[in-house]
Length: 187
Length: 180
Image (tube, rainbow over all chains, first blue to last red; front, side):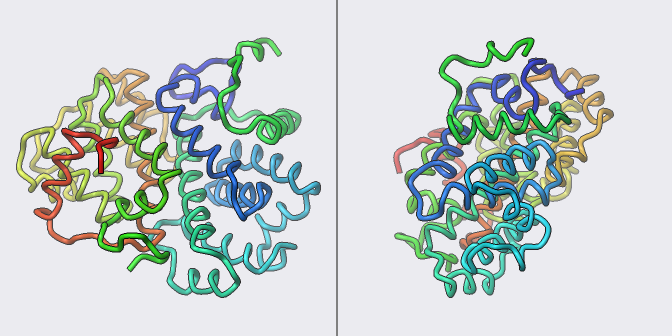
């Protein structure tokens, strides 16, 4: 049961964003820019960053949702699985390995990011903007994961729920649905 | 020097990052403005104390000191409150309700799952509303983001409390969307 009264029909982050729409607006906008805006990192690559941070924060809701989004964007599920459990051998570029390594450091703390990890990312061809965006995406998911679990929002067990959420993320993005969420009642 | 090239290397902490990245700066500043300065049953001084306390727990000197200075400006008290925040408010007279909310914020800093039903009950029994509990959790979570942004990109920070006095006054009285 959530620690505060949240709408029953909206598990996870969605109920929180509806509970507090004033704070949701900038959080949604930031996420839309970082994960969906023009970027030299693909949307799938950025979802991998969101997933690996959520996984290491042990936030089951965010990990499941962003895994579903990454799988849809990449067209397969092996890459995301490998990134979570065996990054060294994951089928991603050396640049992405270096950026995901930085993201994993950010998950622990800002000060954990080592100059060597930054130097390595640059040597693998990562630009300053890519490094910036990686750090900020990782930091943003440290917010989301704590928000979702810190208020004990509901984490559904049903995998079809995350498939639906992944499709909503891929097809609609992170902005509030124009019609709101009342249509999800009793569904 | 920061890990990435900044347009103005002299701007400390998050300031240099925001100036460099106006796209993401807009929602980041709007979030800070809404969380810390919009109408709420928690005063801005109380909310800045939560922000500064979490930043201290994250060992982020820039955010701890600047938001401590903003709290001092709101509360019209001495900058030494910045040091007392590190001592878990040994000297500062804070309400029992705020103490329970700071306890929740400290749990959030460790990880969302550390917040237990007993922590929430303690806050409720001191009169904290759902909105106040929500805002405390989100302020703590947001500073787990801001602190990582500032330190994860290796920005520099002035050492002394006094160097943050004017910044704290601007944060408190002009707000986060002030013209820079």
